[in-house]
Amino acid sequence: MRILSGIQPTGEIHLGNYLGALKQWISLQNENECIFFVADLHSLTVPYNPKTLQKSIIEKVISYIAAGLDPEKVTIFVQSHIKEHTELAWLLNTICPLSELERMTQYKDKAKKFKSNINAGLLDYPVLMASDILLYKSEGVPVGRDQTQHVELARTLARKFNQKFGKTFVEPKDILPKQGAKIMSLTDPKKKMSKTDSSQSYISLFEDPESIKKKIMSATTDSGKGIKFDPIKKPGISNLLTIYSLLSDKPIKEVEKAFKGEGYAALKKSLADLVIEFLEPFRKKQKEMAQREVYIKEILTRGKDKAQRIAEITLQEVKEKMGLI
Ligand code: TYM
Image (tube, rainbow, N blue to C red):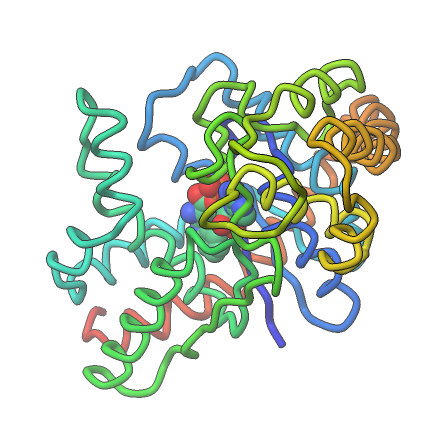
């Protein structure tokens, strides 16, 4: 299968990004043709600092490798290096109903969050994402739950284009983890963990142990007692149990059993130790990779060349089918 996915460069990669997306990328890389990129053009739609963006883009590539992507097996590139992404986005714009974009949950959330900067890019964001996916005729898109609506739009646009202009695109499918598709915020477990919220609400993949401990120990939990998985009545504890289960590779039932009769603090303390231990190799690899700038640039040049070859062919085909010269 051809697999494709991306992460925006702004903000830090957190446990939610890892458990929802990156972890899947890593397990898919052995059996599939994988293309992963840094979605820098998407990140321009919300307030950001142009002075630090370049650094953040490189840091994301380092994070991918530190988390376990093997640059010898997968293609890694930066979205803005392949101009075909924006060109195809324009062409897809012409077949995308405005109403589809206006009903997107993420658009509505971001328009609320960034009231003073509701730019056209924010609305058009899912069309660029459809372009990312369709340009490479991707079959599978490993993402967290918040992105499924966008992948669905990519599928709708592929179908629409094929009907109108003849079979061109593959209809992509999202690939969601069975557990962990929506990791919740540590400070407000009714909201998803997000890098645009306060840093207290998430754990970065490269966070130092002291800080991990502090954040987990002060994570918002629920009233009452008892360590029980119940996302409606006990969203805080259920989120911590999910993270525990995924990082320890133990079913939630087993974790519940292990903490039977214990208080919330015992679970938190044990989870903090588990997260610290789990992320230790990530921190090490990240430090090592941060010293290898030439190697990282080489990976990106190779990735760009490979992606470019596929992108050019698809775009040429699309333009011809649409009647352009
Ligand atoms: P982004 O950068 O917001 O998030 C990257 C990936 O992490 C997943 N994710 C989560 N999973 C579980 N729990 C959470 N709390 C959580 N928060 C984030 C996201 O679902 C995503 O998979 N638009 C995309 C980037 C993108 C893309 C693409 C992805 C651009 N073009 C094409 C796939 C294919 C985004 O902003 O992801």
